[in-house]
Image (cartoon, rainbow, N blue to C red; front, side, top):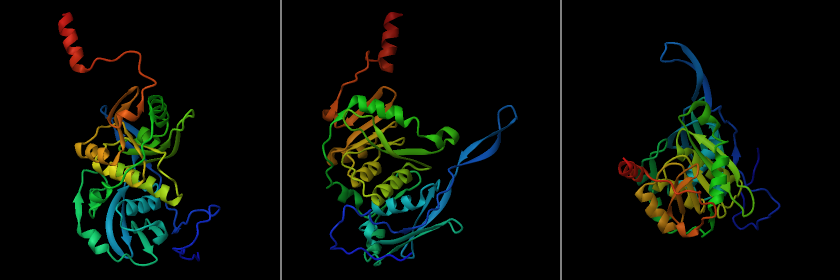
Length: 310
């Protein structure tokens, strides 16, 4: 395929599709059928999640090996490079080529990245499963980002959670994966899930969504981001770079994640399941329009109440 590097001073034509590098399409099936033996000594067929090593090369230099389901390797690669700030923009990328025979993805840029050594010199080992390293001083840079203030309706949270439960296909079949979703909740309309990605690590799923947004020139300022995993500083960093103002999870939050969300302005909603959630940042933006009929007692209150009645 012959393509021309986009001119840096070219006037954008809104009728033209977003620039896309030359890319393969090498997504793998996410689950594999196997036979296990149960507690009665009987064989049982079932599914387990796939897991492949994908080594990323940028301009022929080995960067990292990602453990992934392999369902969206090209989007994962682009999202990883964007979120790690190893490439300046999509237009700088010439090609993304995945070769599963060698378990590698080759990314070529039009002009070789000149400050790659400096970026790779600073590494932070993280809590993230499936990733584990952040390059450069991304945290310091991201703290300067400010996401837009947007209102959040309690009823929209419930509606979105109800829809999310219909999308975690790999988890229902095989378990052992995390899921992330790019969503929007327009006023007076049902929530929309633009993309749901499952992977062995929540950061891989988040990077794949970032790559999808990058490839399709999607603005994150009116979007929500859902994840099944913990709301760590890394997850806040990723949504901040996507300019997404609302981060929602069924899991918990870390203190560093909360600190970053407060600085950047991300609405942080955790422990979201069924009719329950906890807003750790941005409660002033929540319109409580669907408050449950009865305030439930917490475990301590139930124990105290039972003891008093006894």
